[in-house]
Length: 152
Length: 160
Image 1: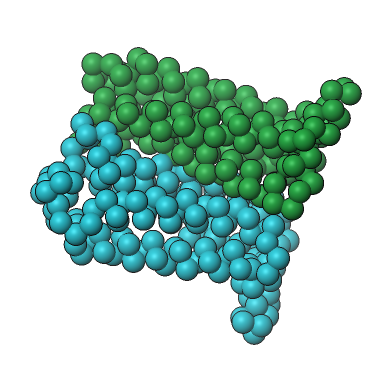
Image 2: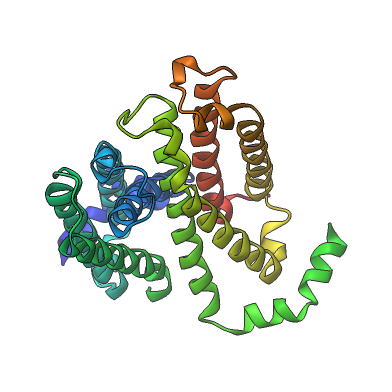
């Protein structure tokens, strides 16, 4: 696993792990990106589950692009955070579970957007199941992500 | 300040929060979940007030606000428990103090919205027809809450 040391010793890895403000700045970006990505995804899922019925489900579709913006921020800030502690995060169980949670949450929200939120406005039982499962995916990501620090 | 910290440290609630190792991380998880709910629902209404997602009817933009209130309530409760559990860490911390000031300003922003803008929005007026600085209020809301999240996140990294 020499490559993990090499990643940590890279310029970006050192900037995140060893400079005075590198880590808090990247961590702050990661928190804001999370709030945007998970926050908007939870809202989209809530609408499919029946919250705010006065707003048609298709009207919420532009917000998916906002969520994707949050995802890009977190993909980049997350990669930078990983580079700062590659040799420990790579073996951190909470980190593995978090990544699985993110993949589940993101994939299910995206699927929901494609077949329901960008659909004909009808919400079926299947759509509601996907919405509920996406919330569970995000919850796994949030819980495991918060526990990464406690596992190391 | 010193006496407040001393008093909080002497409470039974403080002892309980610090004696249960699972409790602090659980509160943190709820705090993160709450902030996602809060910012997510604010993004929907504030961006609509800035002209985004125009197919969302203006008069209904408050319908997601129930989730914002739930998110804020979760974070108020968990936040108070953090404060009681570890007052030495928070009360003297400059990031925490600025964060509290910004939350008060964000509250005043909501108060102004209620007083000046809410009735126009419930009547379904478009942004261009509204008076009272809709765009400024919506922008302030998003900027303030983003800063509040950042300040909260950097509390452990700021020397007071």
